[in-house]
Image (cartoon, rainbow, N blue to C red; front, side, top):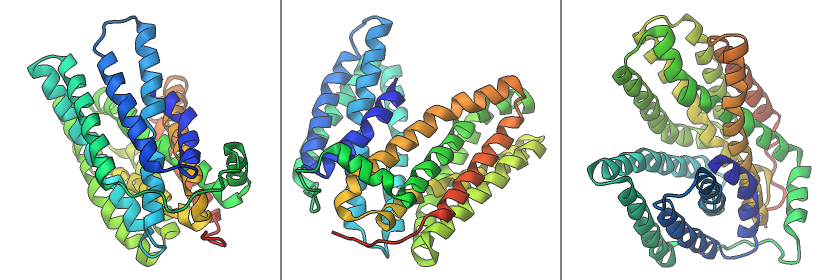
Length: 339
């Protein structure tokens, strides 16, 4: 339900960020999340939990399109790749540190205190945004409706290719996050500690590669680096078929992680396919496509695992990465209007 809330509302917040001060949207999100975190400590029904998950996704996702649009707005065409990779780098660090601190608090005291800490952090973020976050410099015409902005964005063939590429690319994440641990345990016989080390190694390789790829993409072309990354990922997924030991699985997984890190550069292509006044809308739709890929991945690959066989999920994911590369290749990097 969390992912569903993100998918349904991310484009809405992105569109609103082109029409109002993004600082206000972020403050609204953090204030709402402060209350939602407190509600998690109440022992309600399973339906109550699902509603909270939906609200968390719908409101918490505000941070994505608003900050991403601001990053795209602040960067130039010569540094868009580096800016996008730095955003992804800090986002990845947050996703690594957050669960570690949250689980430590829950284990040392109780799970309620982890939500109280999250609520306090949201309050702190309100003051940080008030103090440091820049106001939006480019805004769409307020007379234009969000539906008009949505239709305008979807009419661009290059934007369509970018959105579809995001769906296929982010389907690949579920292979590493959801299915690789199962495959390593059932087919390779790896222990729980070895699997945990494997996933952490993949995450670390992605974090290092993201910054390096961003720097390279500004010098050798963002499309080129994204395509190379997706093709590397595709080949790595096929190599899983020949990995019979834990050592081989580690090597292949590191290569797959390096390839998957190219997804961070898709955000850097946004300035190439849309004018600045539409950054929020396009980034919001793009984010919803990411969410859709994350939702579809486990469903598609889970079906492949059950019907055909575990090894074939790597063949299917290899195909989706090739499709992502082909869609990126079809994008025309033409920026006709910067205003």
